View 1: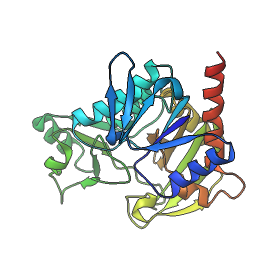
View 2: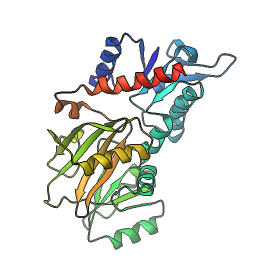
View 3: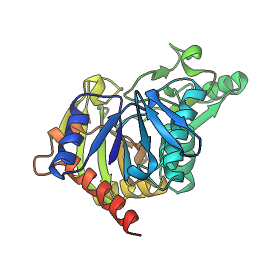
View 4: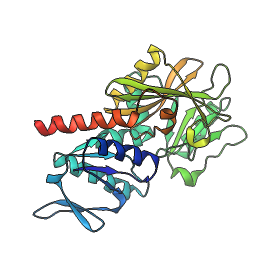
Length: 296
């Protein structure tokens, strides 16, 4: 039996379920925020009205971790950690999900690995925040929640908007210098990596600086350069991922990585990738890893 943790009952879940069906594998689709841990003489998970014995689970594919309080997020990750303690393969593994869900940690890891990223300033100190804003006031700054996706909560700080949305940010201020394309256009690139190979890529072209599919960006086929491919693979490896969605932008100093997503959506990139089935490649890799582990 395999588990799929997801908050989405739509296209992505259906894609995954179809691949499991083709491979004649039993799949249970569950929501992690409706799952409990039972620790007794026979430790197990409880989901709704049924129990899940660790002995019956070969692997868990993570498609979604919901937001919430710090305690809720930690508990949801604890469920994944517990599965791994019981020798269940979690894909992507829990540690790399933790590394990538926190933008601060991602930025630190990428920089330590020598991967170019935008200049970044993170603080909880309002005085330091104001000093940094004054230092870079000639440039626009992008303010982001450290937990978040799909462009939610992003804000431009400049002379016309000096104060971030303090409540949205929960008193942690993550600021990056705005990356302006040399041709002053709104475009970035998503490269999809599975096990050290870029299997699909696309450009995203928008009418505003928030440039993702959820915000209405147009996906187009794109063939990345070797430099971009290396950046994507190196970023995925730096965070220890089996698969990743790596976002790259072009600034005045060259290409840089702006995000590495351990639970990437792929509907947009699949729409411009005619010759491959991303779900089949991803689940195929997941099943291979699970089977190799079980053989050992």
